[in-house]
Image (cartoon, rainbow, N blue to C red; front, side, top):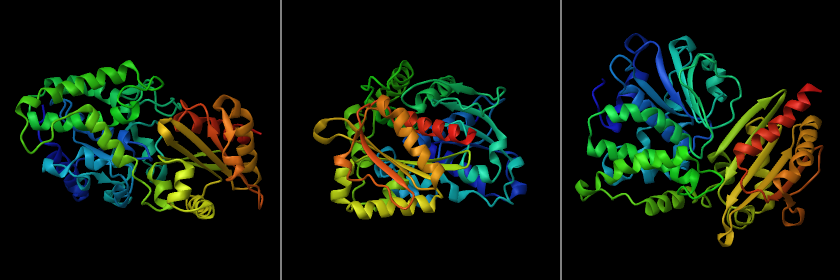
Length: 406
């Protein structure tokens, strides 16, 4: 098996291989990448899967490069990463992560010189698709609906419903981890990486809508690694406590009110194309009322959203909020058809078709609604709080596909 190294050393080795001249690097280069939202689940799942695939038994051992699916500048928007890689560890920092900005130019890294494993999504999108890398996907581990793009012969080809994709990743990596020689500091750091998205995505394993046996079993396995280090933890390391770790992650993740609207909209964002229409969905962790009061008023918000839609070349822009005003878990949804008549029809049809099942109720007497210049916009409180972007985006996309078939 590959010699075991720290996470920091592993990332440094991966970066060195990526930046080496073509004649001096592995061919093909093997990547592991999460989805375009580049949230904790995607980033951490890519890191952990790549680490353990690289440390598989020697007959299978190939360097896997974990790629965070965002530009390097956007790492600064993800303050929650500092809870996973705190300075006191004197080890990995967010700056050690490999991002889209670190990729060689397309001419220096042609698609045929790559292989791709997808985690937390099953369709490669964005700039990576424009480069042609989507034709070289060889494996996938995902907890979203299977869109039928991953070939049947892909290895692995894992699809299962669970709160966090990390839970599936850990189930795939557990046999490798079990074979590795125990190393207190490395095991502790890897287990903290594993637990972060599981705790956030399942609300400490308490969300009945999201938590599955996959999540419970994965958390038990990772926390066993953490508990095993408690008696020998060094004084400069903060001992693991589930409640405190979750609270710290949540506090940093939810701290967005100091950001501009553009940064808020791009912090947790996904984009799709169906037919001739582009859809972008931003998820923000504060309610509209709080944002309008603390970040900028209605006109500022709508102008920023329209600018963002133009920058992203969107026909339909959607914003989903998730917050807990007064301790009550709340979701809100805004949909804006601004790319012409077809986009408006899709936005309207989405509301007609799914308004009942999602429990859509007009937000604040229609304050953010509007019809002007051939556009249509509506904002609702979403009473079905169990439906996140994972459920709402496919609803929007289905109406887009119906429109394309007409």
